[in-house]
Image 1: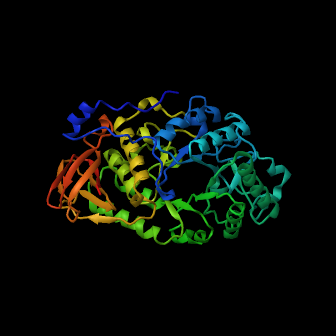
Image 2: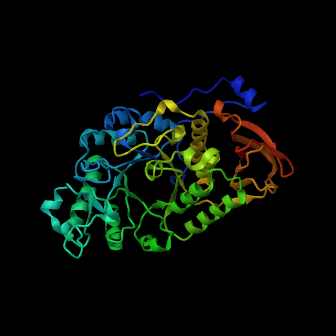
Length: 458
């Protein structure tokens, strides 16, 4: 598999692009200054490499380490039901998909990730199993039934049956499988699918999360739901470490394909902050994942966000929460990926502007504690209605949603010397840093749909 990293240009070229004082700087191989400055990366083993195996993916962990991925969320690794070949229709939670390799191969992958300082979370599917799962014949008591005694297809999904968490045998079987992967493969956590299912009791999550964290190793849990929603607030007592900032992504995707209204974007950001204050856990923020990219007809970043996709990526990494990178997002999300067939990421279609923007943002997110998951945000007033600007500690971010260039005064910022980490006008040529003097009365220039990030020097 070919690497997607693009060599930095010569210093002279960068200086010409960025102005006097611009210089190359090393933004690869960074590590988070605090656990709340981590970045999560979603990977489908079958799609990540041409081979589609644990071994092949393990050989590519060096470039994810270089990028700065801290947590690797592996989409379901289990044998699949044959009806639709969905990874979320498991035939056996104690085994791995033979197309991916063996349990020992998974263990090797996790070991290599740990050697590089990365955690590995498995995708856990607690609500249902494939209709071909052996439990259907051997343990019909493991399943919910309708009034006529028939097993239930949740949401009409014809390839799965819903599990019954009022059966002690089912609970123990599921818990035993989770314990197995911690013991056998040394995994570090679980991304839990459809945790808002009304058929999974709150007490189940409370018990298993507490139990798995009672043996000395910290096991982290990400719940696939927005716990800030009133209908999901019961889950707030379960002990999940992270949930999805689901409503945040939904609002961005609906409203910001081509919007130039900074006030509307600020309102969405305010709702994210208000919602986050209502929950005990931290939030995972994202612009895309396997559902957004493939389901509902399929939507790439360009489909969802148009020319705003670059500046919204800056927002994802600098505003609030732990940012998610879905495989291929770092190169611009060039295609929809059918995860039922393990369609391959088209690494050769790399968008240099997006790649260099993401590389820089990961390093920025890692480096400054003020960009941690829960650090405060302070808005900066600007003269125009098309520019959103904010500050988090020494980090100043400006986003121009308009299509025309803008000269923007950042009212209220502290005057002094700053390092410009990111400039949309030049980032396509490679990461470069420049020292600039900023003051409330001085104007910064942003191209249409442009962005800039500055860091106050101490």
